Image (tube, rainbow, N blue to C red):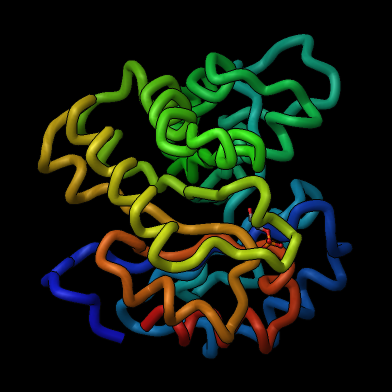
Length: 258
Ligand SMILES: O=C(CO)COP(=O)(O)O
C-alpha cells in the first residue's frame, strides 16, 4: 500500500517476536512453511526466536531472505554471568538482529535505560542490528506522558552511537497497554508518536539520520490491521508477538507490509 502523502524510501520491516514459545522442532516446521512465502521483494522479514532455536533457524533460513534475530543479549562479551548470552555468541551463530529493551525485559528483568544503552552499543560492537523497544505504560498514557517517556527512553538508548549506527537502528514503538491485549493503538495515534520519536532522533543526531531510521509499531498487530499501520507516513513496519507464531498469519503480515 502506498504511504499517505510522502515518497518514503525506507524498506518496511516485519519482525516476529516469538517471546518464550516454540521448541526447535516447532521452529523448523515454521521455517519450512514460510520459506518462499514470507519473502517479498521490498519487505524485510525477521524472526526473533528464543536462543535455543537460533542455530536451527539460521540453518533453516539459509538461502532465503528471511533473517534471524535474538530477543536479548548481555552487554559484556564474556565473563562470569551465569545464564547469559553475549553478542559474540549471537554473531557466531549467524544471527543478524537482536531485540533490546522490550517492555517485558524492562518490567520483569529490571532492565534500565542505562542497561538498554549498553546492550545497544554491544549489538553494534558485534555487527548485530538492534530492534530497540520504547513505549509507555497505561498510566503514563493517561497522564499525557507518552511522548516524554518515549523521548527519554530513545535518547538514553541511542547515547554514544555514531550517526551511521543510529541510522541503522530499528526502533519499535510498543505502547505497553497494547501488548498482547488485543487493544491496539489507532494507526493515527501510533503514527503521531512515531513521528515524534523521529523528531527526537533528528534532534539527537540530525535530519538525515531521522529520515533513515526505521520505526515500527508493535502491540496487537494482526493480519487484518497491518495495512492500516503501514499506510501511515512514519510507520515503517511492525514488531509482532502473538500473530507471528503461526506460519499463515506471519506470511499475511509480511504480505500486508507491501
Ligand atoms: O510485544 C510485542 C512484540 O514485541 C507485541 O505483542 P503482541 O503482538 O502479541 O501484542
